[in-house]
Length: 220
Ligand code: ADP
Ligand code: AMP
Image 1: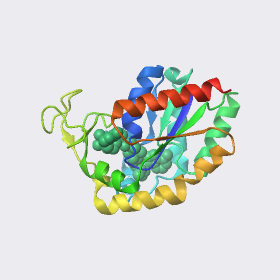
Image 2: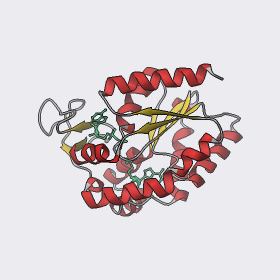
Image 3: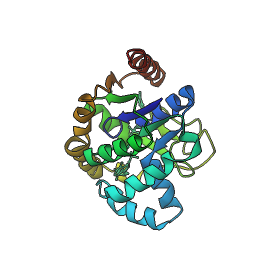
Image 4: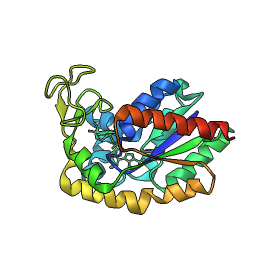
């Protein structure tokens, strides 16, 4: 399957993407994780991306699309992928559409995770991620690591993302409403959007997502 996950920052996209990717045997492709890996390796792309990320803005389309394309062209993504955080505006959605068209492939679904804003703020305030791999995600109260400050998966150090400060989160939410939400209508026009609530226990949301995707797949 080829799936796009959308939802505001803190909706639980990364948390669900890791689980869904495993269950569906497709790679989880997160542009945010790819940028953070570039920042840790101190690449030119990482240096450029960091200035935009720290301000809560989107990284320019040209570099983002090139990076996403490169990742989607890796052999493990040949038979499907789960995109998390890409596309994030209509131009990126159009670029993705063109890329898929040249390969004669189509998206199967756009999974829209709905969460009230006050919940998103609580989730982001307590989020902690791993220095070794930013897809290892915890929450100080909702999903604490077994040992405080240490990643359960790999033993790496847990820290709070620079862009999870209150001020940057406000900016990221505004960017989500003005630039990313329009892609939901864009994909609704293509009949691809399935919306589920992202409230409740993580495992329940995964089941909800799998059911919704099954319905979408069967309905075609
Ligand atoms: P996103 O990728 O959409 O920004 P994350 O998956 O990183 O969101 O989740 C944001 C924070 O909320 C993390 O700290 C995560 O542990 C926590 N979280 C994710 N899903 C839930 C849930 N269903 N209930 C409570 N907390 C959650
Ligand atoms: P995320 O990990 O998805 O919350 O993304 C963190 C930050 O990375 C965003 O606030 C943006 O600055 C940047 N980013 C991630 N994905 C994209 C994208 N598709 N387009 C532009 N910027 C992105």
